Image 1 (tube, rainbow, N blue to C red):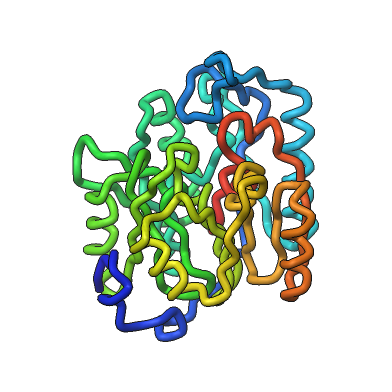
Image 2: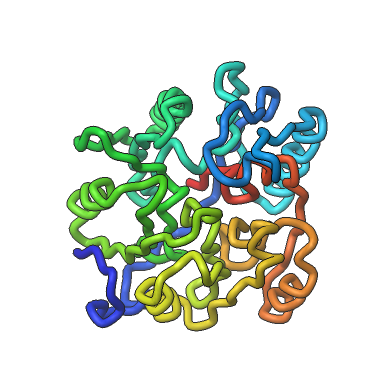
Length: 295
């Protein structure tokens, strides 16, 4: 229907949109070859400008814990085989954009060419799953899938961002492909929160976690209209990547360990909180949401 930047132009609210089923499956990618070989974001370098060093056995243990936590919650978990030439393959939220209610999988156009081969891995996987594969026609654009595109919980409504990793043209093509879809568009403002999924976690139809400094005034107004019970993260929670948590069913929240006060708030609101440790992956700028693709 429209790409909406200004809340004054948004005449509807989430419960006005068609209901859709919650995702039942997540796609991960094994962490055997996870590493930091170049800096794609501010988190990947230490205070001296050197690349962060990954403890690979520890990273694999943390990845397995997350895999096991997803599986224990009732989600179906699939995992891609690790590829020696794809150290970032673990961040499966980025190389594809999934429209699960239509079983469409869009191929991303990665901002860093070293990550572009991951897109073909996703294409093959979703093709085998019976998804219709779609590609963007625009050339020389950035479009990083669910790094910058978040479905409103159980509604046919999309939250999308433009900034360091995704351009407007990609969202314009998505908008044109689905005339019934509204897209709430945010312009990311902070270098440390380079994807929308690092600054916004959609929990249920009313509730989200967000990093205030990542949004401009228009974005904050849209966000509060969409999520009347939105929770602003403090600096500690933001840099613990609480804004990169994941909630598939509106009830169970997977979030980085250590945000105790936030977890108490979520529990008081009726959520079940599963603290996990993704510390090695946070060195690369990603946490729970980045490490899975929901479908």
